[in-house]
Image 1 (tube, one colour):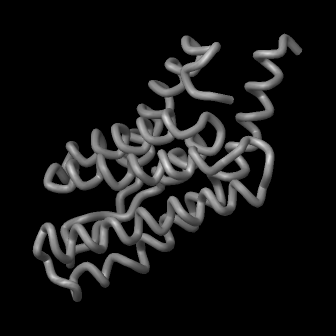
Image 2 (image 1 turned 180 degrees about the vertical axis):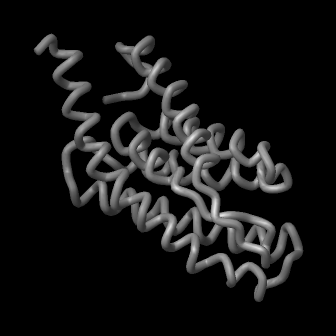
Length: 171
């Protein structure tokens, strides 16, 4: 499915829904990381579901905006970094996924995951000046977060893609 072409009302609606779902799931489960002042969450499952099922534009918007909105509730210092990092995660994952191949879904998840883990490490260590040691403390949690995101997001994206095809083809 190509974002915002042909079925723009449906896709714009789904982008809004996925942005809200990313924000809600990110806020619902938060595991604090005292070394950085950040937290681990389950929102990446929805970021990947959106990106892999609806493409780069919806994935980028839902990932960046939904996650940044969640950061504004309790962790506002992270919001600008999150907007960029999670936006790129969704954008890249959605750009790689082709809506058909599990291999492409896995590649999309992998590259999106690298962007997320590296993005937070670099922003915490250097831009926020927390230092490498503090930023390294969050890496295992971010890897677990991204693993959960793929474990849930990839199968959910496959279900969403199938349902969208059924609904839009009139079945």
